[in-house]
Image (spheres, rainbow, N blue to C red):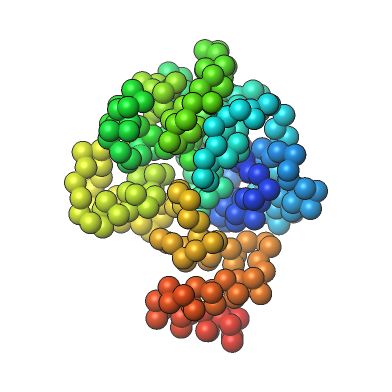
Length: 304
């Protein structure tokens, strides 16, 4: 029997291709019984060609349906900086934009999934607004926005209790804060409004990003990290990878970008010429290890 799991993504015109790779990684790692009811929040800047591309994903994967949701709220006065655009705020409106479900996943599109997330949907959120992963950032900054560094969370991957957010009328509180010049925009807003009512994922599998990776690699101790060596190894091999920050793997050869490109190769809209042009640019920049250079040559000449 199929198990329906609702999930929301959001994108503007600049992130359509990464969105396709992200969603493909989710579906490639789905269990046989998983069926994803996918919603993609988009704005008027996403053209018809891009809309069709997003919808075409459901033709390539039998384990999903895809619905495009036009974002019509006026949030033009919301604070934007560097790589944080209006699309970052779309997640704040999920309970009003998608009313079919009382509980729903949200994911940024700069994430790669490497294992199924379906079991997380069983988390009991009755007393919580969200389920999320803890996030490492400046202790002083987190305190400056009146949040507890021990419970500051990342907004990139969430399980949202839409029912409770609607009942407690949180959305006006979210919107009231959108003009404030927060460093992490929507993430800070969610931490401020939802604090004390957040369920934390117990595994590092759902909160693995570059900041946590470098803390681990450097052997730095942080009392917000209390994971065993086994959990750390599991996250390295199976955890979702969040490419947070302004540098993205499709632009420059950052941390774990090889994994993003592996899923690019496996997604339905793989463009061989674009792929090799980007890899050649990385090659000329002396960014690729010997192992990756050999692998790239094999793929170019033998198509493997």
